[in-house]
View 1 (cartoon, one colour):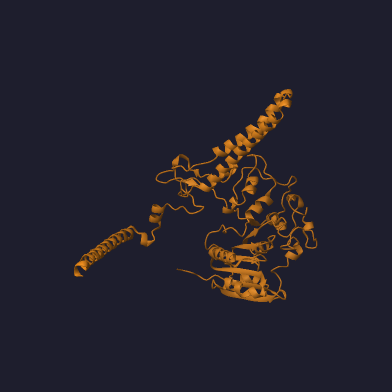
View 2: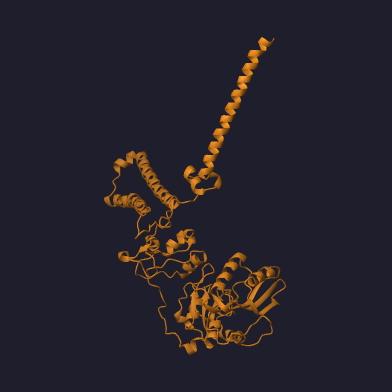
Length: 472
């Protein structure tokens, strides 16, 4: 029995030891590889190593920094589509001719008709495709000194040559550094211009040096859609054909301007009298009554029965002699700036032409309009304004995150000790706490804080707040 068992036990023992040795070898190799991967940085989440080994290119990611491969792909697809369309047209024309062989022998086509067919159906599509291909720009390694100039990623997005010329980086002449310390000037456009490509190309379609189209309303539509800033144009702005000299400053502040000084083509009204709040077809709904000077004269000057109204004299008394320059952010015809001018305070008024000539009205009164949307960072340096006033613009319709960005921008330009004057902000009663937090988060000193009912579900809010010093 022992002799029969011995060979079997010996073989089993040998197999067992062999498995142990192989298992040990696997463990040694695994530990060695593990150490190699660890030392290479795989377990430290090194993004560069992962990209090197796996060559992962995220969706909508450009292959080369500063070069938009998606725009290039779209342009090539556009050219291929034009070539396919041309081929289909030509094949269809040949097919129709083959079906009518008998008539083809008898029919004579004039040279003029043949020329017209070639121009419209062959040459123009080929030329269009050729130009589209020629306009594709590939990245180039250029630049002054040690810098590298990379192609603007938007250059292959647009077909209109004037847009492409505008957004192309402009290098300084003879390789010098300019006064800003840069080697080239980069003209900017709003990022949403790509989403409004058709409208922007329409806006930039003009003859250089000739008159621009009367299309300020298209420009404003683009601005409100996020295509802001707009590109500059090289055409001449149209003005009224019967433009008259503006009134002198001692008259213009509280006098309706001459109707002939406004181009009324893109407005519903054709004169200032039509803009009266009594006219239901005036074409605008915000700031009704702003074009009636007798009503405007009463604002900020006399006491009101409501606790939310604040007088200019009370505001200036808080900081005597310190309020010199400021910003009026809202929809108005400049009456606040006019009253402050009488107090030797310079106010810049933001304005959009929301159905009426607000910008023209402000300028014709001898005041400064700032054509600006909510999308844009204010074009003022930090800690420069003595006063920011807002009325009837930032209401309960505004998104809280957008309002947060706007308020922080106001805080940026308001100097320490400057005043933030919020007038008749209104919102839904249930949203009041959210909006109050937005104003209180800056910890401004309260000179006035008043809430009053507007309707059953809405409330008015007015405040006069002082920015604290932040010497850090």
